[in-house]
Length: 403
Image (cartoon, rainbow, N blue to C red; front, top):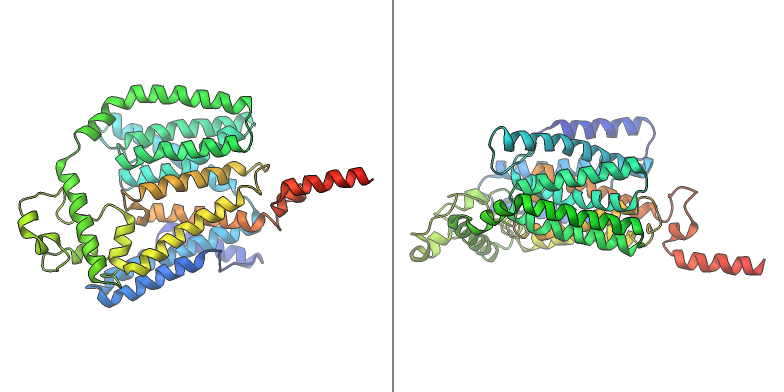
């Protein structure tokens, strides 16, 4: 049962807010899907070989709710969304220094910075870098714009240094969506200049990293490809055989050859002479992993929860179109596109650091969705609060004519 510093800080912050009279909000829009996923994880204990190992994951899910509770309550009270962006950016600048040290001093091929694995860092950056890009395109302040630009370029280099194939493929997609959303909010000469600068940086980056990236894709281990097929086959066997799942966090135990889910048990003539990269690895997609461990309903709950997070952000875009924090929503929606695509190739969204980042993002989009109609500052136009800005402008023109 892990009790990390992050959880203790969230608990302390909740207590401090409570003592200050801040209303603690226990429910967030879309939380029903997460609750359903949690319940499916609990029910999967019926088929678990080790309830203790399952409890570790269930405990982590409870702690993630604590993180959500803390961040959401704070944001509903303070509306200080950017503090998380600046905090994450500063942490990633430190991580970049660790990447440089590891790559050029320690000789680490696939950089991971301060993260437990290179795929963890790759997915973390895939989600946050589009926010930096959108902020760079929108913010006119020289200080903020420069900070976002530096954060984007350094972390893009760090992401490529992971040589994570999923991150390298999905990161440009997230950035392209961020550019499109920023331009949809209004095309300016400054944004076009930034796009030209991004194109130039992309060319320079391609020249620096192209040979190593091509080598990574072209000469990837055959065993790695075999492993992906092997574990995906095993996960599909588990989903078909166990509607309630084999037990959350029990994947490695149920991959034993004595269980009928293992492809070597079902088709020994096909798999016996094939080598996997790791004998007891994990299926390389979060969707099949959740489906195998928590069953069909658990997979459906996960998809609904991810859809709820994205929908909250997407539905808020039009209301915040003229707002100074539009970039935050545009970047998050773009990052979510990249991360959800990348999750078809990797399972790291279930790792603690990425899970926690998802909860922070969830709290931000849910809070901004709620604040769009009631709690935006008085200086914000009425049309922005209602989410119907064009109608509000028309009403204002009619009122002026009438007077």
